[in-house]
Length: 110
Length: 114
Image 1 (cartoon, rainbow over the protein chains, first blue to last red):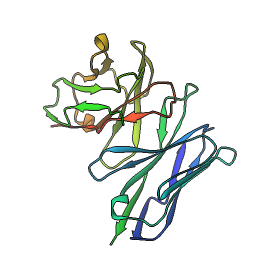
Image 2 (cartoon, rainbow over the protein chains, first blue to last red):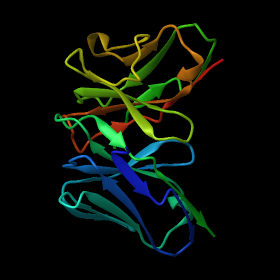
Image 3 (cartoon, rainbow over the protein chains, first blue to last red):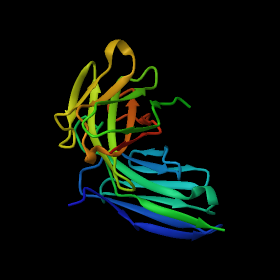
């Protein structure tokens, strides 16, 4: 089965609204990373998390290693937030082989 | 911030030919990676490389694939011979430490095998 499960698979947001993406792990994730793949295909590193929370502008992420999930909150969505959001966690003991979720495709509408 | 550069950004190649994808990692990074993304799907780990050696590879890293970084130059992924199913976007990444927070991806090479 999927080691890293993302939900929802797709999301359509009105500009200015808030939403949350979720990642559930069936592996013993010690860290989690969130990436945004923009419409041009480039991967942008959003967050690297140990258990806890981080905030960067309108984005906030939390990681609970005991309950094996992570969330990414988007506040006041803007058109440039459109893209596919991926979460990833290391799946080897060295911590350098990332297993990705299937992604959440986000479309922000004006 | 520091960047990983991938050359070329696009490549079209005839099935059976050889292709080399080039990656210029972040200058002080020590760990290098290749990932494969088939159109619109999730990223899949191919291989990681450290100190001149392959450390780990996945089932997707077929016998036709090889990686090297001769003398600290480009980190390369070579596919010989190519097959139709090799068509994908190949992302290179690098990090200073294993599992580091500085895991940095390039913009990808879009490979089309025809």
